[in-house]
Structures are given as structure tokens and as C-alpha cells.
Image (cartoon, rainbow, N blue to C red; front, side, top):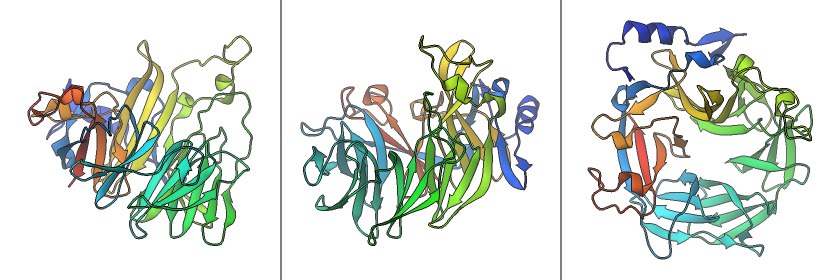
Length: 373
């Protein structure tokens, strides 16, 4: 294993300097266009990033048995989790408090809760019902407040709420993403950005992601390489994540009648499955289509803003408690509350470890909180 701690070894210095931040058209740019620059064994202690670790075992009860968590959000006093097509509300100690809404097609119900966002100042939880084609709004106490329809023009699959407006995004293989702004009180939909092409028969790769930083909203779209700052009137480019020849082409994603691609890739391809930043770091979670014989291998790229260092992949390790490390491209989650990142670990992987003597292998998952100091 290559361990970066304190002074860097000369080889590591050369490795990192080859992947430093660049500037393209005046925009800060991170470039990851060669698989041979990825070292799957590169390590850095969490302490070197100023991170401390806390674990929050989620309470296991007969009425709250969690199979798979596919969404996590946070408000000042609560965690909000998506699992088993339910929305669970937990306190900050991990105690289960209640379910929010229920699956169904009636008033106040959702067919498939896909994305959620708590809004502290309103004490409301916004829930995107993807297949139900609507947005439900609940009070933090679980009361149903209202519902409104999603736009019928296209399939919205992501959103962010800010100052009485909902910013919608769609998934699509295009250079520009669809971004719509919906004024909740006025019931008016405005188009901020529109795709320049419709999907053909190719598989999806152009996922859009939204994150917030210091009150501003940012979005990334795969086929564009650009991270934009967005508001109700416009989008503005702020930095780039370029993948060069490792980006999928439309023909490589298009499947023929015999289930083979129209054009076979001539090398590894990269697929981003989340991207965001904090005040100190930028994180990119991605897979490589084939890396040393392994298909869809996950990685985590990290850019240290203060040190101006870009790591194409990094394992964040906890030497004293290795079971709390972030390794092998495991995903970290950013919530609405700044200052922390989260991983979701299964109880079976932590049971019996130091600090988890009371955790049983069949308990609910554990939230691991990485506090950014």
C-alpha cells in the first residue's frame, strides 16, 4: 500500500504533480483522462484531511427493519432515510421516530420516493415521487401539507428546493442538461437550460448531479464536463472535470439488435455516479468500465483545494479503526447540513469491532459520520 502521511515520498510527489489542477479557458480544471494514472492502493489517513469519525447505529425495531438505504438527508435535529420505498425519520442518536407518508396512490402517498430534501426554515420535507409524477410536501411532524404535479414534458429525476422554488433536472445523453425552475406559490415553470438532443436508443450515461456550497447551487452533467452555478435565471460555468477519451460516446452506448454496441470502446470508459465539493475538497465518485480485468470498478477522486493536489483515486483510512475507513471507491454522501459527510456501513461488517460491541450482525445499518474540522 502507498501511504501518504506527513512528508510525501518522491514517487508520490511525481504522481500527484502529474495530476495537478489545470486551467482551461480561465476555469479551474481537474483532468482524469488516463486509467494508468489511477493507483487503487493510494492511501491517506483521515486525520490528514482534518476529519474525525463518529458512528451512529440505526435503531433496530420490529417496525423498522432496513434492507437497503438508497437515500440519506439531514436537518438540524433529524436524519431522513429512504429505504424499502419508505421514508424514515430518525433522531441524531439513530433512534427511529416515525415513517413519513406511505407507499400508494392516494392523497399524501407516493408510488416511488426517489429524492428528498428537508427545508429547515419551513420545517417541511419535499419528496419527489418519480413514478407518481408528483412532489409531496410533509411537515417535519409527518403531517401531509400539499402535493403538486411534476412537469409532463419530460421525466424529472432530481431536484433542489431554494427560496420557494424547485429546481428540476432530468437524466439524458446530451451536452446541455434540462434545468427547470418551478415557482411553488405562483405555479409557474420557467426553463433555465434545455437539452440540444433527444435520447436515441443508447443507454443512459448523462446523469446530472446537484449540490450546494455556501448557499449557492451547483450542477454537473456528464457529457458537458462543466460544473455550473445555477439560479432562477441562468447557469454560469465555474470549473471543469474533463475525462477526455475515457468519456463514453453515443455510438458506444447504442445497443444493436444482437445486444452488441454499435461501436465497441477502444479503451476504458469512465462513468461518474456522484460529484460534489466542500469548502476544502472536491469529491468525484466514478467507475471504470474495465480496469485490469475488473468490470465497473469503483474509485473516488479527491482534490485538496488548499494543497492544490488532485488524487485520481484515494483510500481514506483510519489506522486505529480500519473498519471505519473509506476504501475501494466507497461512496460518501453530502447532506443539507454542511460540515459532515456520511457513509452507510452494514452492521455485519462492524459487529464485534471496538466501539460496536453492542451491534449485532442482523441489526440495521450504521451511519458513519466523517466530521470535517
